[in-house]
Image (cartoon, rainbow over all chains, first blue to last red; front, side, top):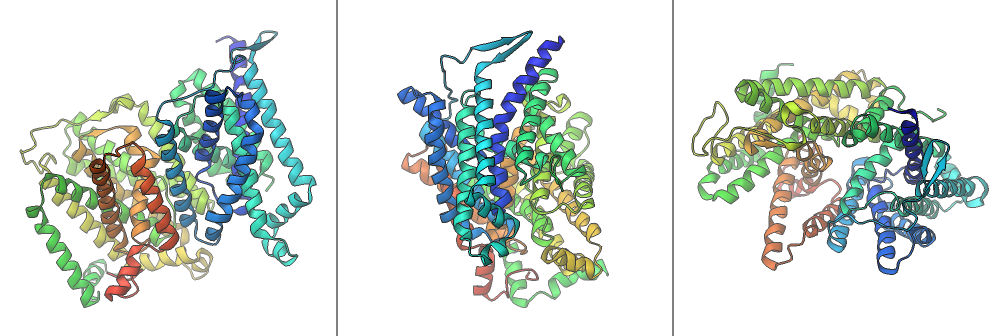
Length: 288
Length: 342
């Protein structure tokens, strides 16, 4: 197999992997602070994908223009979910939380099935087939756009956590919950804000993914699993890890699709997950 | 510990009221098929099947606190092992069953060893079980010897022939097999709970560090819980294979199947003996009832049933976090309804 064909596939996987990374970042941020494993993560992303696809189908709006409205809307959605539904479950056992989010996922998937029907939908932007030719490499324009936007979104999230007062407050909650309560932080509000930020991440990732793949109502659970695989490989709760894990999975999926068979590509991801859990359960990119 | 005496004590030491109720229930289930048509019989088989797998899962999660969301792995491996031996080599299912249990106990040992060696628990353990189930599902999609993603079909003989040796027969035979399985699951669960392993399991579930400090071999008993649970679940897989006669990786290993397995014990009452059985009855009847109601009302849109299911699940976990059985058990005077009840 020619080396440039492999290089093309690797670069494509890397660019897609950055979008995966943004999706997983949402899950990781929520877990890192609220200590809730969001089992409805992929389903929420599918909702964002439908928002972008429907906006395109009904009004011809480019998914890139939907990024900001979806991010804001999903921030609100995440805030409301945490405040109204999940907060009473914070101190419940893990299996209770799991069932609650599972119920949410079940309702979301099937609501979308009833409203949008079972058919796969996609977005046909006029630059979908454009590509850049760099030497022997042929790189899709949409993938580059998606990767750049995903990186910007991640950078924005890092900046919020690093430099704003409220980012500092959230990190305080994650580091020492009791201490945060003692100094008078409104933990419930901060948890809800964090859940909102995580949900906004996955909303943006969903809009971007519509440029790369088709969406069906039942694709949610697979994305939930994918996000889990990525954050475990990167290190649950680690922001850099989520991004690096996304790239690793994106590349390994692309290479596996090329070398073995596309239908077996997620087998590689799960094999990686098993290896990481067995030998480095804190994640590949975690400092601990 | 004398296993035999313990097994007897499961019944003799149980409160008289529970004992009577249990015997009445068993007798009722034995004669029930006389009053059922073919459809209701199939519903009862489904209830008993889910009661059995729920009990098998409950040993691991309810008793020992190890959450598996990949239990369909054991159903699938058990089903494929017995089915492939039967189809390719003509091995009777009663022998194939032993092979199925062996395969699943070995798989459970691998998962348990990988996880417990490093003290992986909680969410991480749950994700590990999902990963194994999904990995195996995709593997079987490409495993040509058992049909791959195109499915694996068992020879079907005429349904009125009654061949217990080869598990080929009519629904009535499968009803009594399922009843036997469910009763077997109940006895094993009660026996485990009453004996030393049950106390160790619960000590680990409630506080692993304290259990270790008290001298419980935590690794060994967690392994035991996973192995017993996996081995028992294999039998459910064998039943599934010979009852339905067809196996598709997507339908038997899928994460939806794993979730289906754990709903009954959670809704019924996690960690209790009777919870998985009650939960299986409630959920299966509710699901069939919703089907009937939807088809009668003409709103048979795909997805509506699952929405109602999801809502019911969410409401149940919000307002009855310990399940239905503890509430009922208290009303009926069966004690606390958890742990030691029979």
